[in-house]
Amino acid sequence: MILNIIFVIFFIICVFFTLVLFIYFLVRHRLKFDPADKNINKIVIYGDVRSSYKIHNHIANMIKKENPDMILFTGDIASNSHNFLHYLIFSIIENKLWKKCEYFPVRGNHEAEIHHYQIFLDLPKNKTYYSFDRMGMHFIVLDVIDESLHTELITWLKDDLEKNKNKNISVGLHYPLFTSGKYYPYQAPYLLELFDKYNVIFVFSAHVHSYERSIYKKTNYIVTAGGGAPLYPASIENEYKVCRVNDHHYCVMTRNDKDEYTIKVIDKDGSKIDEVTSSKAEITAGKLCTDI
Image (cartoon, rainbow, N blue to C red):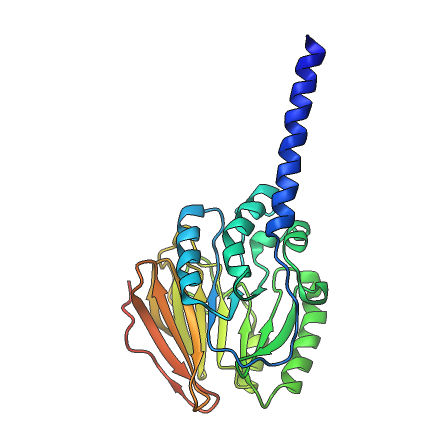
């Protein structure tokens, strides 16, 4: 009798883990990385979904309807970077997007434990920092989570910026360089100097759960951290702030025939909460945003 019970328990455990592995291999991210430029029409940028599955799924469904060609995910997949099931649920929700478009992740602080991050997401050359060209824009993805990478990363970044200095450039990193809280801005003046020197148009980040846009020396610094995680009210002063909306959202990037890039920010109800058009030559500040 006891042996039969043990066998049944063992069988149930085996079935459960077999099912989990089957789902993992079915839904995990598979990126065919090609850094060469592609003439695409629409890019979505968003992040910080964590384990708020209901609103995360809602935002992901909205993004799916946008029919983007590419997504830049600004980091924070799960509440617990050691939790396999958190990553699995994230992958099930995001899979609807992975099937439709290219998907490039930025490592967040909730991906500090690198193992699950690497097994669930294909990374270019298995690196957590990389660059590529899309829609006439050179995108640079930085890993500011792993401090051991600092010297290597900055050396690579300087070289990459210099090689692509004549292009339109956007950067993605998880920690914001400008924010109104809950956390203080990422202290990296050397990045501000580099982004100014090479005329970076947009810098996308996350971490502080809200939407916020700041302008510093003609670069738009955009915090897009409204993919589902609990929202953070403003708590510190940001003198460079142009706009802050405390709502779940995503950003849509398009380009016109004048080589100008427009970012439209859409909240969870489908309303436009901010819009900015920028080019390497000139920035036009948005007028729609209300500070909440």
